[in-house]
Image (cartoon, rainbow, N blue to C red; front, side, top):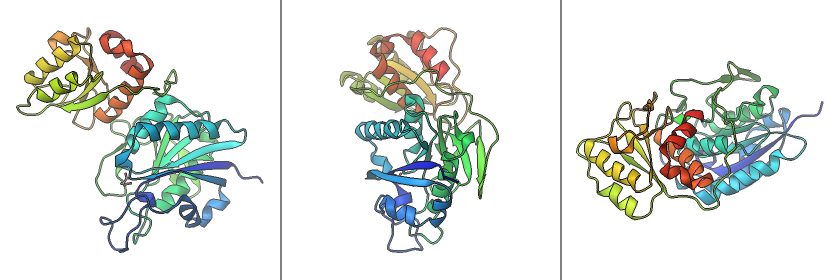
Length: 331
Ligand code: SIN
């Protein structure tokens, strides 16, 4: 039997991290082990798929950039157009994985399953989680049931929708969660089982911007100043995502500054800093009353990725909260 062909695109992270002390999971250097060594450490891979690997980058994912996103998306697109590729696995740092997953989800760059995986412990640690996560990710990417489910995240034996997965713990091996929705499947040894399909798949692929708009995140908390918002507007920011309290509540000082920003043509999107739940959209967006566009259940980091792509595709959305709200309602 011919095994499915799976491409592994490596970008660095703790899954490729190493330490001089096997006993420490805290003191290590991320992004040092090449993808060839990661694959060699998991002999069982050769029974699951015919693997080809590419070292797209070797970074700590806290340093993710628009340029690397564009390069990664281009490599994903390239490989997905090869006839016999069954799926693509991306090894990534956990710190910004949720943003890259959101980007690839919205960009829709692949016609085959794209599975991001990572590790919380470096490759040299006493009980590294990377080898099993990599094997499980390849199992999912090669599995026929993964087709049509968009970008996926496989870690700690769970399959998450790329739109929903977030890093929710600093150090635990079960650091990833999909707040409010939960995982969409599991991997147990050779068993790959999807328990449901993700419903919020993009209706239309959004191209990555040629010129990335300036989109930043500000937070609401006790007695904030307005200087940060004013400085961002003066610097030419096109969009602001607010990590608001609760159901999108914003301190009155910030509301005044953000309303001025919206009147100046800056897109203002309310998300929540709570970690779960929806920010409910008002019936009529009205920036002067502080009723800005709602990000729904997207956390501020995922909402920023969505706003980057929306404004990149259609800069006029910055001054059109009604249309921008429709965009967020559909993704
Ligand atoms: C990183 O995000 O590159 C480092 C942290 C990790 O992968 O867990």
